[in-house]
Length: 167
Image 1 (tube, rainbow, N blue to C red):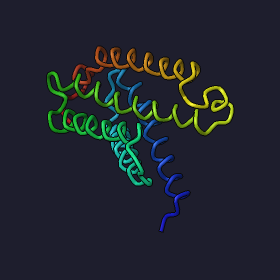
Image 2 (cartoon, rainbow, N blue to C red):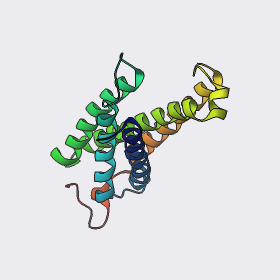
Image 3 (cartoon, rainbow, N blue to C red):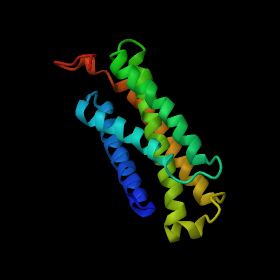
Image 4 (tube, rainbow, N blue to C red):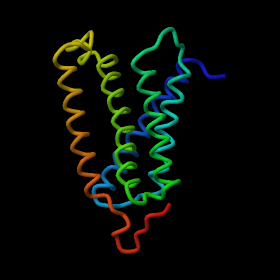
C-alpha cells in the first residue's frame, strides 16, 4: 500500500515525465516532427498527472483540482484530434492548441509548487499574490502563447517527406 509520501513522489515523477516529454514534443512540433512514441508518453503521463492529483485528500475545491479537470477535458480533445480525426484539416491546429494547453497547465502547476516548496521562492511570494509570483506566471503564459502560435503555424507533418496525417 502506498503511503502519502510515496504517492506524492510517484505523482511528482509522473508530472515531471509529462513536462519533460511535452517540452520535447513541443520542440518537435516547431520542426514539424510527429515524435509519435514520445507524444504517447506525453499525453498519457499528462493525463495520469491529473488523475493522480485527484488521489490526494480533498477537503475543498482547489485551483489544482480545477486545473486538473480542465486538463483532462483538453487532453480528451487532443487525443481525439490526433487519434480519432488523424490531424486532418482543422484537427491539426486543435490538437496543437489542446496538447500545448495541457502542457501549459502542468508547467503552471509546477511554478505554483516551486513557489510553495522552494524556500527562496516562498520567501519572495509567501501568499503567491506578490509580484515575483505574478511575473513568473505571466512569463510562462507569454512563452506558451508564443509557443502555441508558432506550433500551429509550423506543425504540418503531412508536408514532411514520408509524412502522414494519420497515427
